Length: 336
Ligand SMILES: NC(=O)c1ccc[n+]([C@@H]2O[C@H](COP(=O)([O-])OP(=O)(O)OC[C@H]3O[C@@H](n4cnc5c(N)ncnc54)[C@H](O)[C@@H]3O)[C@@H](O)[C@H]2O)c1
Image 1: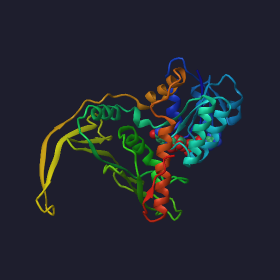
Image 2: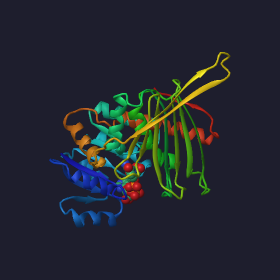
Image 3: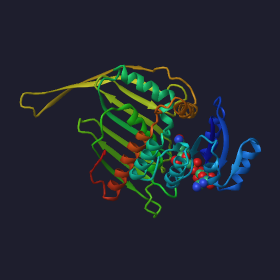
Image 4: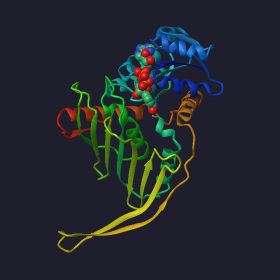
């Protein structure tokens, strides 16, 4: 299988390293506007064709797939052209700039029978796969909340706000782990740079079942935190991605409540029991993601990180943007 990478900035080299490690997969091209980036590729990978012309990839009938790692506003146009030229396509997160664009790409991929996938890298981490298994085994019981914090002194992006930059990771994890359908969002945020691009944002996703999800994203924190708390009616789980090995902790913590006869007073019984640290496989998530893309093409099956999950993430981001610009107004999500 012959593959090309478009965009060799910060993330492109990680993709190159992982696709190069896949058996029976030839990294044929790297395409970037910037000649200085291409010379870096040429210096260490003399067999890779380096080009600044995207059309070279489209014109090569023996090229099977294109991996897009450029800024988000370019994703739709590049992916559409690649699909229409008969290539399978992997797009970096976030999939597109709008849900309408994501839907159009999915339609084209369906029509042309090509694999369209989004790189939601976290779905391939040992920690998230372990959480999925623990939840399927009923360890935490019925999920009640999802609360994520992804903050640090981050790189201010010139074209997208902090939610579009950071929340796709957590939204894709939520989408993967929780079967319930989100009903609406409320989001607030602030831009401290005078360009209307929020550097701090808070998003709440409401569900009709009573489940709730909350996301705290910031490029303006002096400390780096990467935490997800998932509450269940039996146990609660903490995923701390900054822990080198003990990334997951299951707390046998919970509460039961009952109302007294006139229902005005709720009595709560608390339980704080043992903490269990499950073993998490240490593996390179990006290699798992790249392998899933190649295998899904070979086996003609949908990848774990599907284009539909990419669309669901974009749908929430788009609604959040509307909510932020309307001072946190509730926006009901449209799913068709
Ligand atoms: N999965 C992850 O964990 C992860 C991590 C970081 C970034 N990303 C995603 O990867 C994508 C790229 O991010 P980045 O930080 O590497 O950006 P970047 O700005 O560092 O690099 C983008 C590169 O694309 C090139 N480029 C732009 N438009 C082009 C075009 N039309 N044709 C050819 N080259 C073009 C630029 O010259 C640049 O070298 C974004 O979608 C980002 O969200 C994903």
